[in-house]
Amino acid sequence: MSVLYQTTGIVLSRRDHKEVDRWYSVFTPDRGKVEFLARGGHKPLAKLTPHLESVAVVDLLLVYGRYYQTVAGVDRVRAYESVRNNLSRQVLAQNGMHLVDIGTRADEADPYIYKLIEQWLEFLDQDIVLTSERAGFLLGGFALKLLGLVGYHPELRKCLGCRLQIGAGQYRWHGLRGGVVCSACTEGDQQQWFSARPMADEALKLVRFALSEGFDAQLRPHLSGGDLTGFHEAVESLMISHFPTIPASSLRGACRVC
Image (cartoon, rainbow, N blue to C red; front, side, top):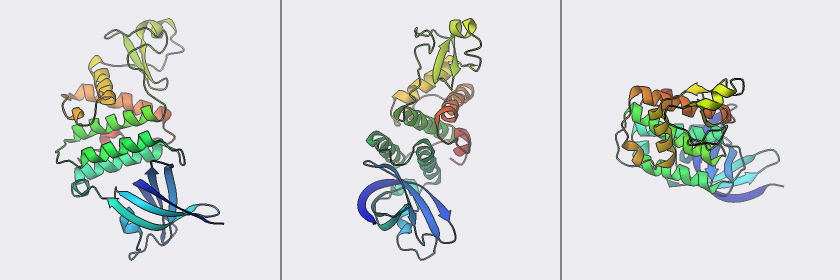
């Protein structure tokens, strides 16, 4: 028997299904990521799906069927007009939603992730101008915060091996283990830490700053080319190692239109 229920969520993604249907993914505060089918959603005159075509907060009426959920009603609550009317911020918002979509599993409630998404969209809904470098840094900061919430908070101050405080220039980065390992440990057991990679102090500072500070504060740091490259390599190594699905493009590549 079908079960009807209501929920509120933020639209993450869509994909076409067969000739006229569409699958949608939204993140809700009470149910986590919810995936459902919109029958006829690909038709030009579809009544419900126009409310789901861009990043927005929506009220949903969903039906549990035998094999999957379908949408029976949609009402857009907030559209984030400044995001929708600015291409660079729209791309950045959609890339953030893509990271949530590939970095989370369905039906695992997490109100903290929902709050992070809200903060991200509220920040992007401001009248701000972003370079591609700044956009890539912001997207990396969003990814770091998301990784922390899904259980992969990186260790940035103590060695993953001996647990002692690391010193400047005396460590390497290990994406699979999730953080920094001191030079003494890497030299003492090269087989265990063979995949650890060099990392500059300034790149590590950017990772620490992006993880701990709000998005408004992330507009302030100076971003040099080499430090930013090290920052992206560290964040992307965490995503590749720990996300259920590997992103299709790099953080920098995703923001080139910005």
